[in-house]
Image (spheres, rainbow, N blue to C red):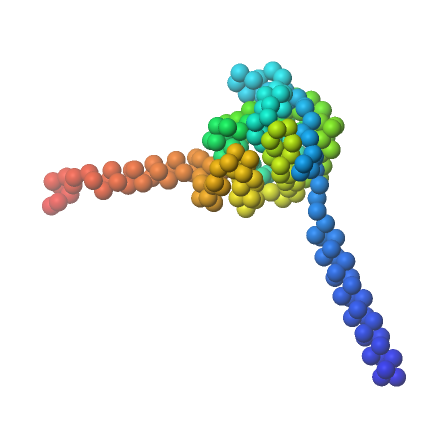
Length: 228
């Protein structure tokens, strides 16, 4: 009887371990979105939104040619995701030798354009932004995954050198992505502090102003009435 009970406990224990292993394996399954490393970057078009590009057609791959390129496909919008987008786009733009684009994916083109113009001050993007005319799925030849928030592609000579399909992006991802961007342009990777300052440029300016104001106050001579 004890043997049967022990055998039953053992079977339950093995089943539990297997169940945990299967669950962990499923949780660790990679998420794919867009062309993978080594694959070609197909040409695609965007409808420009801001400034001189507003209403014009943008062709990122035609513009970049064989130069390094970074494309951020935005499937959804959250604050952490856009902090990451600002950090990566501003860093790439600062390199001067790489092209960078933000491709907005939406099933409603008019609503997307209105939102981007309305939210421009808070989004604070200083690179070309365009809306995909192919809707929420983006360019058909890219095989983008609508279930991720951001798909970030790094490439050179029209080929993918790094692919990041991010379900819950955050600034923590910035260092790894920026390192891949630095690699294709032959530069050293930026520090965490550099990327944080690019993600929140307004916050850095505010801190600098506070320090300047504090120094000015400290250096102001005391009035005679204050010394009494």
